[in-house]
Image (cartoon, rainbow, N blue to C red):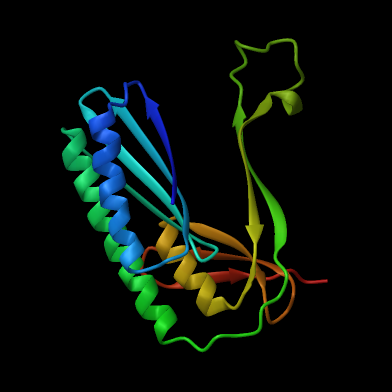
Length: 186
């Protein structure tokens, strides 16, 4: 497994890295195809934040926890990640496989609006800038698989290629636990 560490406002020690790697090795019990793990550790005032993104069988599982101690945050995020992996494994063990189709690439961008004080000479339409780009392979999945992926990444929405219609759809979660689906109309 390839583990990529990122430290924000802190120095990563070898002891902390080996502690996290040992915790991530427990995931290999569940899956032998854990390809990469992105570990982001950050310190913000008195909060120690641990965030882990794991890529398993072409799915992304995301966990994030914070506390007043970095090791406590790491323990909490590893426990949450283990729970999510078990949930994912249970679902795929009870799911009928479908034929494999090619994945589609899509690009994800986060755009930030610049304050007028920083760029006063630009027209209002040009006061935005991309602060993060992410390129992900968008594999075709049905709506049930998309719901599972949305629950695993703990996001508010998911863009996916619908295997049944071969169109790009957006799945989003309501606060009451239900889901909405946006399909293009041509």
